Structures are given as structure tokens and as C-alpha cells.
Image 1 (tube, rainbow, N blue to C red):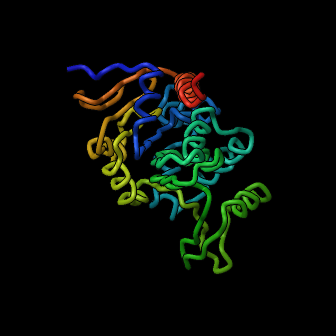
Image 2: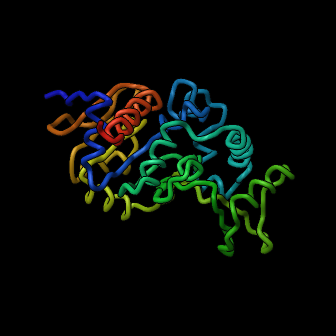
Length: 255
């Protein structure tokens, strides 16, 4: 059985009828903003501009944090130059309109929050906060970014310990897992956006979805076909621009 197909109008109708919406986003939701897909053809794991085995390995970080901070300086400089995509802003507008919607994201770029979404679970962490590896003192993300911009040195706490952003490394547990699975289980519609569902545990969230699943992604998706699964190969910004038009048209008073 192949996954069902769905038009933007059909997607808008399912969003309109849904009482609780769960969203899972991957790298594809941010690529049009200029954030490279780490696993894409020009991504970190292919170009080897940075070695992921050293950049994101917690044991290596504790021995030598310099490779991670070389990456972080470039990544944070990139984030200063870009803005949330139309897809990010569409999801934020749904929440602002009073819809019961929560977002689980695999991304560490913070673009959902910058777009205005409030109920966001970044399961791979992000740069909004950081903590000392020795004493546990918290450091704000803005403070850390300023320190990285001002000095090439590894940022350290007053106690002498290395400060690490709350980004999840290999060897660390993901964050917000209980909230993420609860969000999926209590939803009657789940949107999977810009994710190939290749990375666990996020990839298993659709299996716990309480209702239908709409997947919008470029390329293959590791999701077993079945009833109530709608697979759309399309650009997220273009597709949801049409979905929003349909939602707005239906919201207008009828003559």
C-alpha cells in the first residue's frame, strides 16, 4: 500500500478540523533560510568542513572543545544573518491564532522560537542556554555568543570549567522526550516537515501519533506506508503558502 496523496486544500481542511496538532520538523524546514542540512549533499557530514566525530562527540569535547567552538563561531555568525522561513512563520501564526499546536524540532538553530512559536521542544538542544561542565552554572545564549565573537579562546566559567551550549552531543541523551511523545500521542493530526525520519528517537514519533500523519519533505522518507499517512514531496514554503491561502479563504465571511 502506498501512502495517500494530498493537495494543499486537503491539508488545509485537515488542519482546520484538527483539535490538537503535533509537528515534527527536521533540517528541511530551515534550508531555505540558509542553514545547511548536515546530512545533505553539501552538509557537514559530506563536505567534512568540520569533522562530526570531533565536533559533536561529548568525550572529545571534554578533551578538546576547540573543534566544536570553531564550528559554533561559524554557525552563530550564520544565524545572525538569516531569518525564519515562511514555513516557520506559518506554524507560529497557527499558534498565535489559538490553535492547540506543539512543535518537536530536531534543529538547533532556534528559528521556530524566533518566528514566534512558544510551545517548542528542541530535542537536540540549541544555543539559547549553556552550562559550565564543572560547576553547572548557567550562561545565557546571548552572553555566550558575545564571548565567542569577542575572543578566539574557549569560553570558561569563573570556576575555570568549560562552558558548553545546551546542544545535544553524541553520547548525551536527547531532551524533552517525554513531552514529545505525549504531544504526538494526544494529537489528532501530526505534521512531519523537512525530515527524512532517519534519526532516532525523533524518527519513531510518528508511530505514536494519535491520528493522521501528513509528511511534507523533499526526498525519501523512512515511514512505513499505511492508512491515514499522506506523503507530499514538495517545498515546504511553497506548499504551506497554498495551505494558508486556503485557510484564509475559508475564514472569510460568506456573501
